[in-house]
Length: 517
Image (cartoon, rainbow, N blue to C red; front, side, top):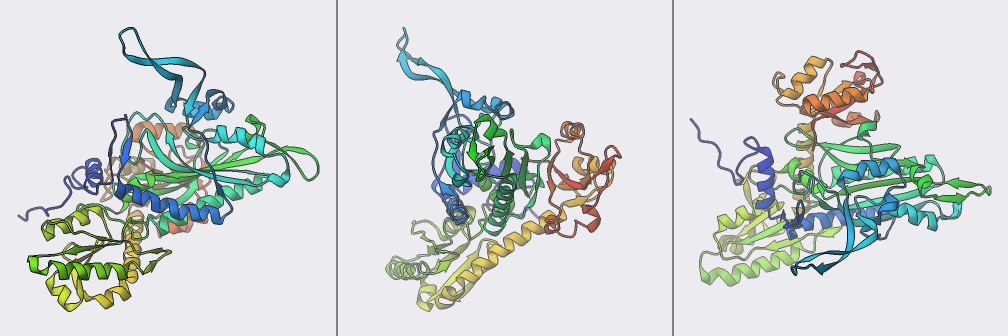
């Protein structure tokens, strides 16, 4: 009997997927649990990924006319109470500040003192405080559209936390806009969703399905919530971004009005939208393997690591000089709008240990350079999307010419792998019995679930029953014009009306069901 393949990460994905995820984060040195309950410390390699996400999205937002600003972390409780559905939706997740100082009690211990006249909510999202500002900033149709974004931290008091995916505090961006008409606001909401889709697929190499949330899954206070859903390697869905058409709910709650060109006073139409550090969790679970993190080159904190292999001290100076010269030349190469980032690992440890360190961190390209490579003006190259032993010797000149081609090939390969996985695990299902088998892992060769495309009658009671029975939710009502992106599983029939597989009642189209994070 063959012994199982030895892997850098233990347990493997098949053995224990949740623990594998935690071990990937630890091995790649991305983040760690904080002393503050449910919070995380994002370490330099992990924060480097977030910085790149910020950079690309920030440029995209500014290119579409949005401007950055910043609002306070604390929101007066009275603001939250002005939109009933909104406050009800976030009530259980709110952290509340009730005192403004500490003082010593009779035993000399520090205790809260100085009760506030009005408590503050640590922002779970900023629609309310931004709505109050909009009511002061907007007077005329000439002030519209108002397009703003902020990069901020958010606090939601989660009961069960997991690094990057669900933490008490996390980082995100939140866009907020105000418009003269419903049509303009809806166009904004859909444009931002397209922007998110392009970014996630092109930079994170994560294929997504665009669609709309059902009423029960909608953002509190929204008229419509649009989303992008990705499939992780355990076949669960991850909501990777949302864009909300808020109608006039918040403008009426906060009295955000403008004087139209016809001299009539009108309420504005608003939107909000955001993505967060949850994208890093999605990135990990989409691409990583049992040897560690795998990073798409377009978003990696560094593209190349140079590993000097020094066996004799007499060779050290020549090898390091060659490595420094190579690094300097590689750093001049432009790769999708930024210079190639190069690390040189000069630690005095064994070459194999050094190489595995960078495999686990997911860096796209490894270059091993010893006395032989130095003399031949060559490198020994490995790529993270290929097997560890799949390496090749190429000349320094050839490397400089082809590095961006190698990086792009890896980027494309990662997306293709993830898309094939989604297609393979997305099934059209036409009966309740088959649906339950699919999500209980009793289907023939299907394993435990994936994405199920099935007809549904629009009933919230059906949704609640499936959540109770199977922990399955409707991830989205997919946009008809985008469903073909998933591949051949979406036949022409899949987009047509049919009958709900749970009630036999009429259904407008198939929706996407899955277990989710």
